[in-house]
Image (cartoon, rainbow, N blue to C red; front, side, top):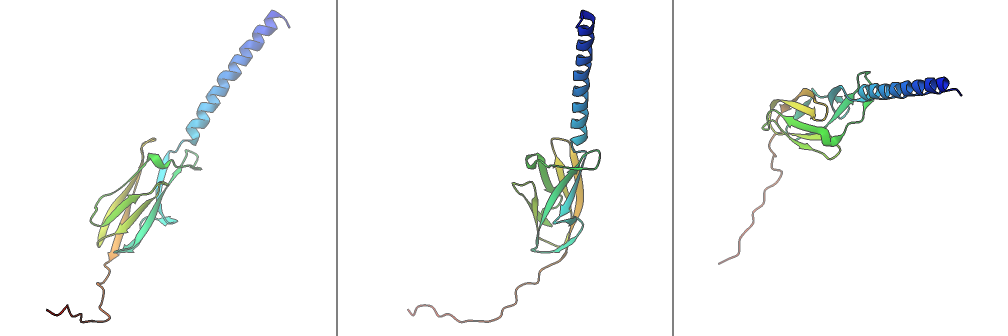
Length: 145
């Protein structure tokens, strides 16, 4: 191989390496999440619940092409706008469990802090649980004095 051919080969190799880095960077951008949404046990969030019911919410993320990408649980933050309507517990797997506390509506928010993505939806509690109705009565006598 002549010097000229060797230099030409090195230039081509350098350009291919550069092109490879550009393709890798583009693929990394395409596979990063660009959208986050909330689902409750497979349904959209805006379902209604009764006081005392619990429901688990899942965050789903998609890239720029609409393909779902893995969610990193440590990056998620869950909040609820009114803690008197429902409480929230963030689970280790990145889901959140909401417990309905009172009739009303509250905004649920999930944020992916690594990619600055946020999604909100409404959790509505429509029915209060009736108080327990006694089924029996008993008399207990204390110790005689």
